[in-house]
Length: 320
Image (cartoon, rainbow, N blue to C red; front, side):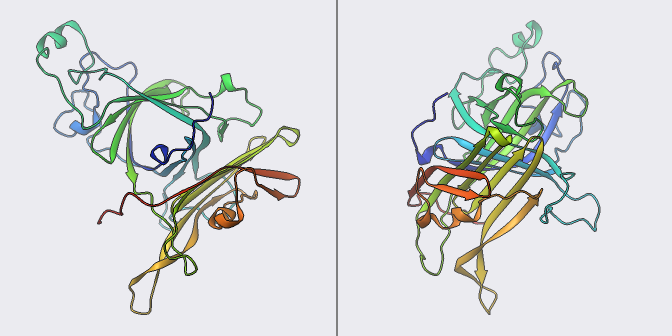
């Protein structure tokens, strides 16, 4: 699939709000989406409250290249909120990178339920509307923490879902796949919340544009691949050598002055690090030294800048 032309409307910052497993196949007449109806509508007698066991963030660039990193939240009180010192991947649920695509489609469940003759007859007059079009989305996995670098494309996961627009900032994904714990098929729903794409002011540049940048490492000789995506105030990277994976997440945070008030400038802070391999996230914080086609060398490895796009903000940070 060819890489699309850079377009800021392609870019997104998505936090997963919850993951909700469902049986597969779904019984006839099951409401879809299922989780928004909880707890009042629960015909399958499933858990009444969706939960989020991970800190999951997806950064998608202006050319629809993405890095998706999902890290388990702490189980023990003494565990750090998120792992940030490298080392074992025990807290890493999943990390992968590739390209995304989506197409508007008719609502596959226009009556709000999986069809059969009885339920369809009772709901023929019930059609629903959404604030935006329903879409079918797919994500190719060029790099996946659950599969060695040498894995052929046809053996990568089939990752696709139906995207229901719950609100202007919330999208519920309904999909099916293999449960990694059991090896059996399951269905699931994931609620994703889009964040505003904001610039990262510094003392030297108090009113910078928003930046979308992508760095890629592809070194078959050493069995190494890696991708870094920086978008606005977030940056994530994944690199793998064989089946050994390292990931990082960085976030821009406003500084506080002596009175405890947040200032207009800030610093980049690493919030997640798992594994011990080098990732060139920090270079994306200095876009003046990066240009499309430029290269970043570290030991035997060469990272290539595939995207460097800048634009002025069109969305403002919502009040919290």
